[in-house]
Image (cartoon, rainbow, N blue to C red):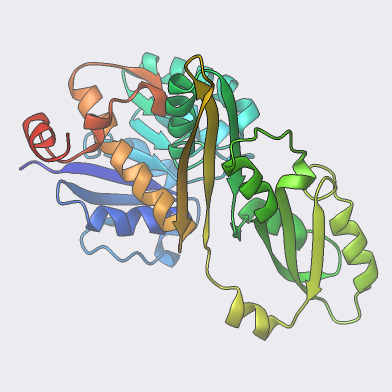
Length: 328
């Protein structure tokens, strides 16, 4: 069996998660990791795979079937997404929801010019949660959809805390409010504000001599991150942070409630995730969609796709016959 040859662009938490997932997929192999750092300083866990500088990517154009892009959505992917799509089939986890249409258009143009396939915004939200919102709303046409995130570490919000003056380190958890979740599950279709749906819990290591009151105020009033939520700030030591907050759990719920028929029969559709490791799970989703990108490319297709455009069978190692026999 010819294996799908994978390249990883960026070797942070997501990149390491992708590497671990590739090891569990018998039809794939990691060929190379590309980094902007000195390649000699990056130690990977896959024997035989190379570590290359980002600028050396083009030299491996004939050696890689799909590039999995593991950069951040704020400044990294908007640049490298279209750039790499011009030369390779790509998968990414671009997650700035409001900018997805613009990003899709930019990647689509580059991928079509390069005759490649690029699947964007792959992960669990956007990604798995997006699919479940679509399925549920297509079935329960009249109703309401609610998305809850957590309890889990928000990497973007944690980074925002660490940028505040006087903060040495910190982490933030997004926590769904149980009363709101129960209200939604009842089928009552409540109207909930941002503040009513989630809490934000912050654990902060302050620099020696820092003004803790000022740090707490800066966090709680930060626009677009904390000002619309009830937020708690707890100051802890570096040792406590490492001992109690070193993992990256996450998860959440998509709940659709609605009615059918003339008698107003109520229904609830719920999809949930509970993740010990957000990066490892996201990496596993990216790898499954890399299989789909390779298959579409082999059919001669090109351009950008989202998870909405990919048939479920394209993700599986099983043949269509095996899927019908064992999963249908």
